[in-house]
Image 1 (cartoon, rainbow, N blue to C red):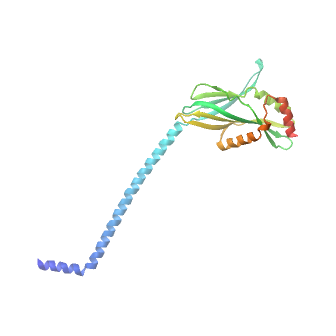
Image 2 (spheres, one colour):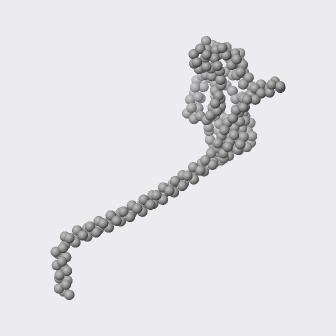
Length: 238
């Protein structure tokens, strides 16, 4: 037994370097294997987390869509010649998604836009009170929720157009700021052009219109003053 121990000791001493290298290789391989497995586990955890985030974001997006109102503004022209009632432009506001409350038209800006016949240049003259922002709420949260009009401005607009027809073509450019409270009780603000096109505009564009209108406000007109307006317009053109 003693001789076997001596022989084994001798073997170890003769192969010391080999065994040290072998041990180092084994430890390195083991370390690489453990690191590889750890990376796999980490990747699996990341994949699970990413999938959870995707699901969460999708659910959030669906909830946002479900709770985002879809507003639509429509325009109609009404008249009643038999009763002598003047033409009136009327707008209706419909909400086609979610529910809202406290709908209001906060501000309006409008221009009498004139395109000169001789050179096609444009003139924008600020108008006041083109629409009646104190409209009528239907009391509903969905469907038809609000109505407003421009009173008798359509007739005065027609008279003005006819009076300066030889000088240029006129149209109205009108914009409104609206607010409402969404289903999450958050107040939201949106901006729309309502003539000649009906379309939502950005806050930046609204700010630009506001600044431009304010800068020209010393020349503001009211469409009911047809005769005075025609004289002023002709002075602009001539």
